[in-house]
Image 1 (cartoon, rainbow over the protein chains, first blue to last red):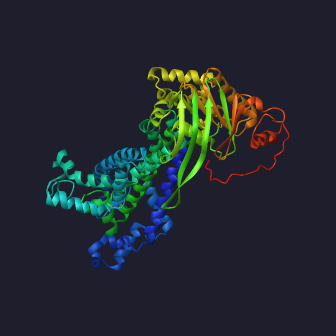
Image 2: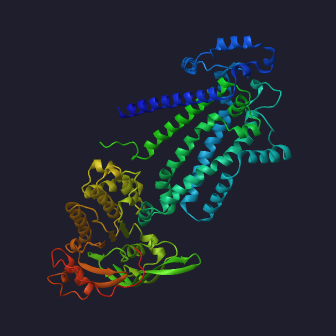
Image 3: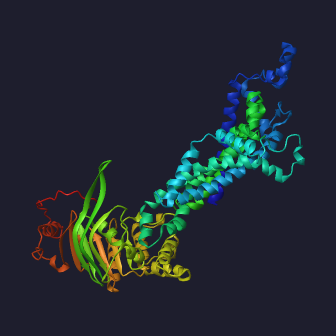
Length: 326
Length: 274
């Protein structure tokens, strides 16, 4: 009963967050210098007379007040119509769907790998503060935490694609091949380098936070008491540390779920990977308002859902959270 | 059972970042604790009581310097032997309730203590149940997380963790702090019962008045020095059987007695660490 209530409350809040994001991004677009008629016409702008432009604007409802335009857009949103992307000349939902499918392969595997490896490394480092292993892992984490993504991506491309020739230089499949003709193995081959780059960098954050939680536990009364019971460091790390350290790791991992959708813009640019990140850049540069708004909304949805999952898992790990006095 | 001979503990600290100095936490402590005895160590905060407990268990931070000797069951208590006997022969009931893991249920934590004491997996869960039942914690409390327990119940979970290890020397660090009279007596009587089973119990406390009914011997510590070791019987009447002025003053300061606190002479000027 309480769980359903809580879930209903959270879903209501999710709806409100999305409404806020919709309002805010709509407001920002209204304030921006983008003229939708110009953006629609593109290079043919000069061939259209002011009267014709006025007709287009009237047809699209640009002569109505902003509030009415917003209401109109919101009604369309609720009926599932995200609009038409003029740069891809397809419905926005279709563009997002296809790009998302590509991005999820790249970012999903990088996300999963960095969360798991980062957590394990953090636990190992934090279990014995100041040990050789701890210093090695910490040094690695600090270096990668301060490395720019695109720079490592370029280095990786230079070494593995250009110099060694092990991995392809760009894209999600060989150039000049239709998407449906590309085999799974070839896809994986194209994914390898971007995923490796993202994972190498993504590990750092989770490792550092997991490690600091482990170190705090090992210095606490809980660990001293366990040592007094004859426990080894491994024993404490295994029986008690994993649970304690999983809390910050969960928060971080699920908070970054938004990146899964938004796409890693930089890494997709460097590897010319046709994911959502690239679509976002295109939409911004070429004034594709419906696509931009659609991506903003779905990114917000993903971040919120990520936090919702993290909060739910938190309640499972830590019994002190979410318990009202009974 | 435990014999402490001229034990001194020094911890390093940095006066400036290059200049290391040693703080003496306690000095020349000599004690003998017999099986079946409750030995109370009484002193104010910073007297070095808890550090004495950690020294006996070998849980000091790295870099600590000890002098003197420890004997447990007539054999020297070396760091290697301490590590072997911790949780099996030597048990600690810690001072802080934060020593309980907030993410695990009480029975689970007691079963960990049983496993760490060398019990096989098959029986650890069951003996955890028995130990908790022994301390009058019902099924509900056994399934509860530490934050759902009252102070007295949490204290009894900690006692059960020491009990389940079947250790022969139990060090209880301030076990009665923050408890109401009923809970406090319950915890202290549990310690007395452990001593009656033939175990040696060291009761670290600053509450002389409530330690006396269960203790056999009392050691008074002050600023890292052992002021006096005496039998409980010496704390009687006007305290004429007590030798040191500090012990006498402590006795007189109790509400049941004169309830006065004369100015105590010769305050020592050594640095002390709690």
